[in-house]
Image (cartoon, rainbow, N blue to C red; front, side, top):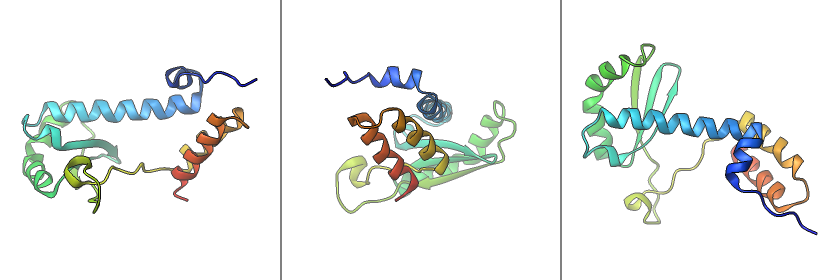
Length: 149
C-alpha cells in the first residue's frame, strides 16, 4: 500500500534541510521586496531576484536596458539601503540569461537554480528518508541538479 503524499508546506516545516532552503528563498524574496520599494514603480517588474554576497547586493534584471536603468539608480539606492543594511558596500546589477527559445520573461529563458554542494547534501539526506518512493526519487533528481551534474 502506498503512502499518501505529504503537502509541500508540511515538508518545509518538518524537514530541517528543506526548511533551510525555504528560509533562504524567503530571505531573498524579502530583500527583493525591500529593494523594489526604493525603486521607481516602472522598474520593479523587471527586477527578478536579489541576493547578498560578501557585502554586495546582486540584483538580477530581465533585460540589458532595464539593468542599465537600475545601474543609473544604484548610487541613490545604495545610500537608502545602507540605512537598513550598514554593511552593504556595493550593488552589482546583472542581466538574466537570454535564451533563444521560449516566451518566458519576454524571450528570456527561465532562471536556472544555482546550486551548492551543501544544499545538494541536505536534499540527498531528505531523499534517504523517503527512499523507494516518488518523493525520494524526485529529491535525488533535485540534488543532482543542485550539484550541476
